[in-house]
Length: 419
Ligand code: ADE
Image (cartoon, rainbow, N blue to C red; front, top):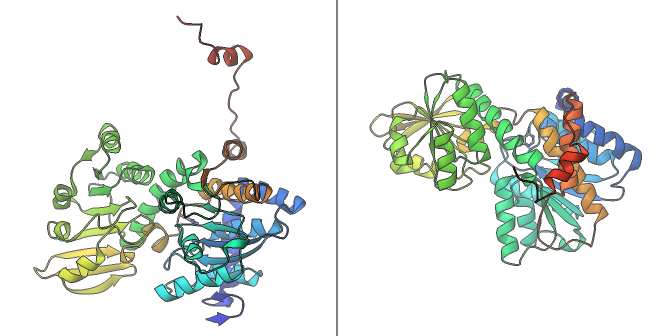
């Protein structure tokens, strides 16, 4: 470990990290277009940014874009197991204050976020709302903050809960809720990278397996779609009647977890809630069932409960722990129940993070330009930004779409024309 104004596992990994970042940048054309403008115009000159994000090659592409736009940035990880040490080293070697170690302890995790807060950020970029939470708990200087952004569903829920109690102290834009974010990153990103994490960890055949997905929001839907595409027999569990109906009509079996527990070969949680799979379910499961979590926090699978009923456990493969229960049954837990796509794979592919992080960059610029004009509430991404990202993405994919004719424009604005 090297300690300067960064904390990374090994600064010698920087060259490898730079190649990974270059790979990401080459697959993030929208962000690169924004980067070119930021470099010319320096819209973030003088802005200090505090970020708590998964330290991946895609995040590095965002951070470098913000820096080229004139900002100074401090970065901590938004999960103890998601940091790509090579990427952290590359960022540190390029003058970013990055505090992140793959496998950092809980104490280190919070200490590193506090180190980011010591830089007195004017704009916060969060993924899961831990940085904002610490800031609101008195660990940092709220007076300097103009605004913030939030990357993920779980973080947006937490921030809305804070705002509803009248406790949110500055405006935050829910980047998660942009159409160009949650309809793509959450669906196709989580769908592909969750399967990727399960495969890298276990290398099991998906075809023919009973694949139980808890939660049919954007993420669960993406996972179900991809698991089905690989030949799995998918079962969905839900608490929301609308989402349950959607899952049924998308062709999946829907049942209660206490039922699904008996059939599943592979279980994935994507609910944003806690103890979704717990002791009473472990006890019903088949020998050899695999457990993974795709939600932001490691609370969805009751790992404590699993510990209590185990006879012993051992690491059987990298990122896979074999829990042997008292009756000899074996259950396999991937990545300690932490988000499987980042802990056991590389997170969402660059192409989809391109849109999420283009939104992030443009929202940071928007916050700077509207400093002092916004209320301390959770905002949606401005429609112009969302639309601009969609149009740019299509352009970089070489896809042209139609435009409404004058006649069609008038027609959809009229009420008098019927059959
Ligand atoms: N969240 C999910 N995938 C990610 C990635 N590749 N980079 C940063 N945050 C992510």
